[in-house]
Length: 331
Ligand SMILES: [Zn+2]
Ligand SMILES: [Zn+2]
Image (cartoon, helix red, strand yellow):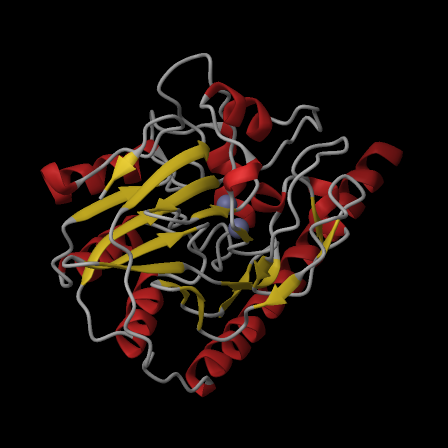
């Protein structure tokens, strides 16, 4: 009898939780869409460009060999002819020191000494360097003190450095589209309300590459690629040359399901799990990218399932580039 009562209470609690979340996500979706529609965006007057561009994935869920750590998070080192920008700090789920990011930087011969600024795509645990970091709206390179030069930080929302990197206290809340360095821009915040993780503001990086066009580098892609492309076209006259990074397609298909995809599917979508982020979302994204006639595409495996990545590979053929830790992408 007691067991049955506990079971009924448990089922009721879960049911009520999902009803509340469904109401929340519907309301949140409206608020996010209204905010996006209200945001007035003007073309950048700045016409500067970078001459050379490469992207080295330092953290993602696949790597070129076993000497490099993988995890479901993102950290990309973007290098131009004279600047280095670090986008996001990975996850460090096991709270290790040195973090997977520091270890991989060591293996790949990269150092904070040469990095000019740190940019956060959004304030989720797999980009801020930890679960506690998300809770406390802070960020950590590792879980013990790390010395770095005092470089500026760009974040779509207010965050603060953790006790492990207090020197990184020059925080620029880059809510609006802005120039970070000559030829290097943030396209500004685009909001979304996710089923479990709630409201999120995310920004993407755009670099104008001389003679080629705009290269977009995305973190988790909660904004949706359709809105990222729309915003980019409002900001630049240039064509979109390449799109790299997370677009959040943890589509669950038989034989292609892993634990992290299931988690991403439930927590990181703006659909209720039973209403399902599905194949059509991937196909619509592919169509919207194809419409821009981009020259290169790479989908981060950290928040997309192998099924989605294979669909992108099929759709883009030799324009598709794998995103793997240790494999530098030269533009
Ligand atoms: Zn992510
Ligand atoms: Zn995220």
